[in-house]
Image 1 (cartoon, rainbow, N blue to C red):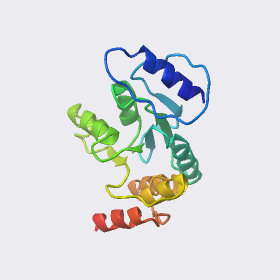
Image 2 (tube, helix red, strand yellow):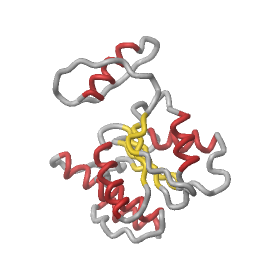
Image 3 (cartoon, rainbow, N blue to C red):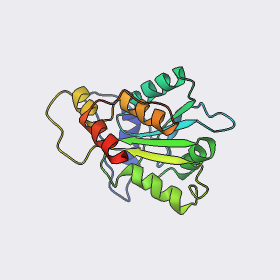
Image 4 (spheres, rainbow, N blue to C red):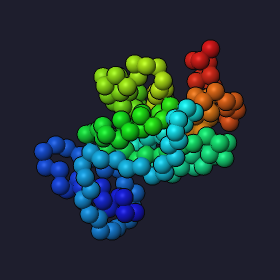
Length: 194
C-alpha cells in the first residue's frame, strides 16, 4: 500500500503536466518520491552478463514479475526485477544500468502496443544500446484483441501476462524450452515465430 500512497503524493507535486495513477481501494498517507525514477526490487546481475535477465515492470504486474524471477532462478537463470514506476519521464539511468548489466530485458505492462515497452525500445535504439547485437529486448503487453470477461487472474492468463508467461518468455530468450504457454496469446506468439 505504501507505493500507492507514494504515487498519489507524487502526483500532487506534478503541476506542469497531467498525471494518472491507477490504484486499488484503500486509504493511507504517503510521501512524494522522485519523479521519473524507478527502483530495483531484486538485483541479480551477474558478471559476465551472458544469460542474465532483467524484467522491467510498469504497473500492477510487479508481483507476477517477482514470481517469474523466483521460478527462473530455480532454473539457474539470474534475474533482476525493476519497477519503472513512471512511463514518462522515462528513467534513462535505470534502463542504461539494466542494459549494461543484462543480456535480456523484458518489459511487462498492462498497456498496448506502442506503450511503455516501445518507449523503452525506442530509447535503447536511439542511444545505440542495441547496436552490438548483444542485448535482446522484448515488450510484453496486452494483446490487440478483446479479452473475455472473467476474474483478473483469468484475464491476465488469457492475455499472456501471468508469471508463467513471463517465465516462458525469458526461457525462450535464453534458449531453453518454454512449455508453460497454453493461452490463446501463447498460441498466437508461437504462430508468429514460425
